[in-house]
Image (tube, rainbow, N blue to C red; front, side, top):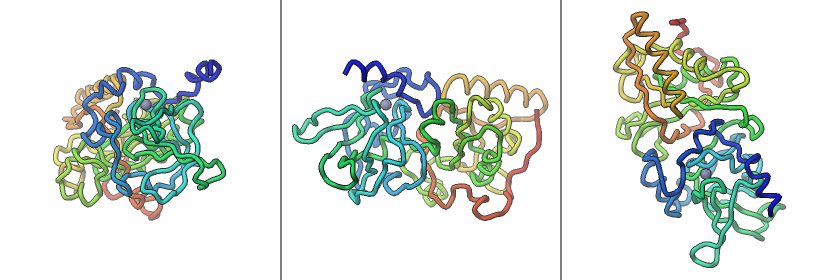
Length: 313
Ligand SMILES: [Zn+2]
């Protein structure tokens, strides 16, 4: 047991790649960045409705992290379809998941070993896979990143909203040092929003691109500069022909360092005469968009209509 505890800190890889994301994130002190349905599961041991979660059917390769603290919990290679309505995994990242007897005295509850956020329950002996283990996890407790566990150690994430997410992702996908991108929705007041809901302008979400980049090859400043260079940050009512709140320009910063860099770059642009309308907002949950939106132009083989590169720095 002592040996396991000794190795725990080494194994606690954060999906955000930044240690400061671990600060002050305890189950008793949610930062106000979660919706009620997220807090109910994470901190009050609630359960999401079966077949309702974002990740139940997701088959993409990557790593599932703790929604609360960012610790890497499960690799996609251990995910399987148990038909139960929740994401199922037959193994955890070593040391990342803690087990305890559930309040009902029968089941075994699983929690993030780093922050004690509630994940779900683990069941043994059901015969689904050779490991005979099923971690039955609420989607809402997880944050999926499309990168491998080994890549997470030197990675950082950034979230940019700048109009139609198809075009923004297209440019980031080609940028040096970028490990992965995904498009989704952020900043609204509904969990697991759909494209239809976001387009109806009833949820308050913006279309956004989440970028995972290798910190040994690039940095947030380079990513943020690219963001300003591929869209018009002075447009106040959308981007190009796409008008409405879902297309507004915003950086959803993940820590103070990202906020400070963003403010500095906006200052540089203003000094050059750009009346920047880009909002800086603290990141809340990034809800991955439907599969058909991911790498849209790459799959379609066409070029963006609403974004173009122009160096503004
Ligand atoms: Zn955690």
